[in-house]
Image (cartoon, rainbow over all chains, first blue to last red; front, side, top):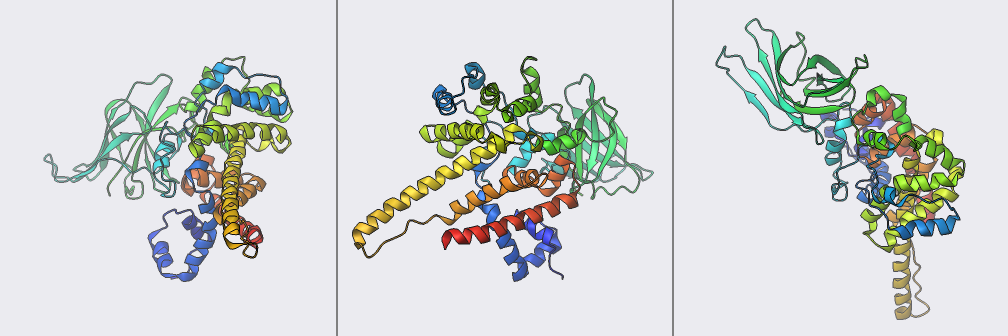
Length: 252
Length: 216
């Protein structure tokens, strides 16, 4: 086959998994591998946990400010109580990883743990879903169904289960069982999302409890395997809010 | 980075994020982060104190993660705020939020401390082998390649414009995939990929040119 594209090689340098064809080619092509290695030098230089985005804040002792004031000649003073109980401010709008997590992450094994942290505010991090079960041969009609657990994301209380059922007329529905706190001025919405996170199919508004959603005919579930529950503000914006509270991956 | 995020607040929509609820809890009398950034850049001393109140914990958290609690970590935090203040002309509020910039400065201070330690170790070793080898067998105290690379990369990152810098920082320091970066920033996948490619090429060039010079 052809060589990998320059863009794919750059992603490989970041240790992103490539599509199967590209990764097979890469494994056997010295030229592409050399390119990845040469791009990887800068990636590796800073891929250490100490330089990763800030994790748990630690209040510096008062002498640190004293030294700063002495060095700069600044006479304004921070409120001691504010520094000692720093707000969990996320730099650059990034989610703050839970305390104690950030300093033990093996940063070189990329694309895993931090993703879980980031998932709650991303419109579509691909998260390894929890228990995925394929139940076959339903009693009430013998239609095969796929069931998936909806796991809470990043400390949310929402969880549940989604089941794809093929009805006798050949149409498909998703039965969603959602266990989540009631919302004020916001609502839950259920989505099917693809792995590239480029495409999302909104299935509708969902309340805590059990509900059924019709699937568009011919929708390829293999293409949109992520079942996602988001919290949407009442802002009239039809796009995903970016706030996902529970998710599971359909086994296709 | 949140400069880019601000481009598409709808996609971001972190209504429930820790950041924003933390923000909301602060009293209305307190200026917001953006305001602090502007005043910091303008040289308002009160803004340095406010920035310290708000972000010293994060910076010190990074320093402690790198060096453990103690004098080294305290030095990093101190130096971060001192150089941020004295170098505030290099901070441009329109290019990104102050805390992200402070974190960038802290990364430099951490890398500097590693380099200093490495140099001291090598000088000690060189002195020892000088003693053993006599005046003819001088050993030069060089710099460890990885440590030098790290400083060069951090330096080059400072020279990047937006959105290139934000994109590569999300990949490097937040471990996001290109798809996640696209989702986070609202930029098209193809754009994110080509920025990543070009930035990695640029960093490679910097390492090849200056890295080689360092070791020559």
